[in-house]
Amino acid sequence: MIVNSKDKKEEEAVLSNDSSTNILKEVLQFKVVYWGPGESGKTTNYYRLREKFSGVKLNSGYSIETTDGRTLWQDSVRLSFYLNLKDIKFNIITQIVTATGQERFLSTREYVLDGADGVVFVADSDPEKMEQNKRSFRELISFTQDKNIPYVIQLNKRDIDSAIPLERFKKELGLPQAEEYADKTLVVYPTVALEGDSVRECFEDLMIQIIFNYFRG
Ligand SMILES: Nc1nc2c(ncn2[C@@H]2O[C@H](COP(=O)(O)OP(=O)(O)OP(=O)(O)O)[C@@H](O)[C@H]2O)c(=O)[nH]1
Ligand SMILES: [Mg+2]
Image 1 (cartoon, helix red, strand yellow):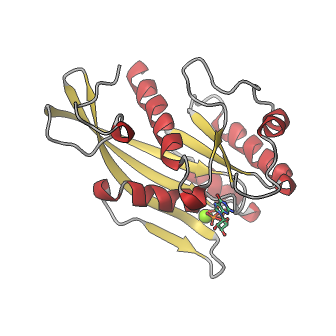
Image 2 (cartoon, rainbow, N blue to C red):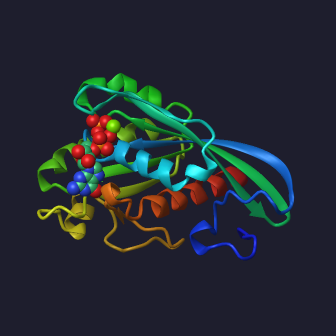
């Protein structure tokens, strides 16, 4: 359904910064929230995305941190992409924010979800963080149920030695054991945000769901 402009590199197949083809018809604006327990890697995801889309960045993005690197309020940046659908070109402007995972900021987190079109849940592979993962996931579901907001689940820090096996993680979160859903999106995206591994794929798969959701109305 998504038609790429020809000669584009595969990694730019869906979201590109190529404005040379077709006539710009519409501007769409979305908001994506990175959600997850404290220090699971949300801000790291955000930094890697900023780097990977540096050519299409609209504003410089801001971030408020405590002195020990925890997110105090939120990180925020706007990215602009183009999507070719049939003969229509859409300019997609996406605001990306990360919610602080700090337990004491529950009300802040709910506010960050306001107006969200999609969520990346960033879980931590450290088995000792499983309870926090579950609590944060439950919190997300309680804030988003009834709202039909698409989300993808990322299991970050796959590089650590003690990383929880994927099957066990899925079981503990009550997710299907299958690798992917019928639409080919993964049930869980294993990532190493520190190295940028799969950070963009995860984001793009969510963006596709957000865009389809939008056109389905
Ligand atoms: N080993 C490893 N460390 C990671 C990875 N991703 C992030 N980290 C580290 O985990 C720590 C926390 O990362 P942040 O991105 O600040 O986590 P956060 O989710 O934004 O944390 P809060 O804002 O406090 O909720 C940092 O020291 C990161 O370098 C990863 O893939 N592997
Ligand atoms: Mg953070």
